[in-house]
Image (cartoon, one colour):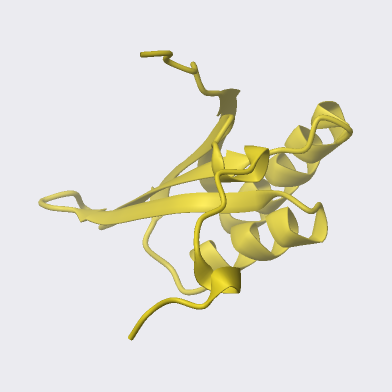
Length: 104
């Protein structure tokens, strides 16, 4: 079916990711939910999510990478602190860093 105007990518600034969240840890229920919920509460737009269960690791390890758009007005120090609190609660490693923007 044709997309409605509200469903199309308008090319606004929020569609261009500027930060990445990488999470690695023991496979467990709720990892995507808890990080997504926190980002949504902070008005951070998740533009892409990639997940993978790492083969052969014991115990099984789960990797997740979220590309995000963080509004310029958001306090990055507070966001990083909140992300680390979720990571500590889940006993996983989380890294949040800016993405390099390539111009072609």
